[in-house]
Picture (cartoon, rainbow, N blue to C red):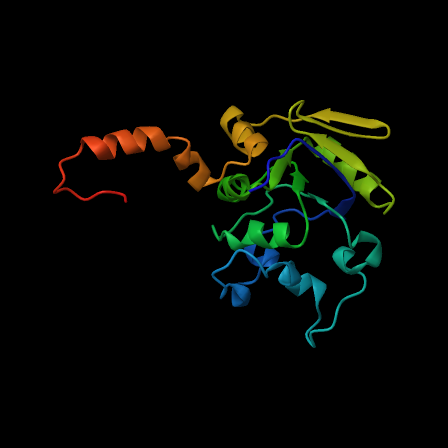
Length: 200
């Protein structure tokens, strides 16, 4: 996954509380084994009517937000099932970060695992950013090193676990984390009796 330092981009407002993973990516689209290809089905039941036609009023269907890279939403974002497809679909749609007052724990960790930055701010701060995001010409900067979110007339600090920050700054997914210990793994494998199973 890509390392994150500073993300600067347009925000898209989605001021809804308790957005669960089935709303993010409905179960009927969980048939792919790849991480790609889920973006077109993001928030499908909000984005399309019963005939499969786009709902123009839905924020992500508006051409002004076609290139948005930061999603701003309400509390308890990503609740429900633990499906990894939820952050996959957000990332595949082009988002690099999600800002909310709170996240479901499993969803939050699934974001970290793929390099999608989850940012927790206060209710008041998110409300301000949501209002700013209603102007499609908005631009916001998230600095992971400084742990800040800034835009014209707004600045906020966010907390993030040190290990999660290390992973995101260095682009380390679970496989890359394991490979960081390659020398120790090789040493251990070399010390095992030859008749025992190896990782090779």
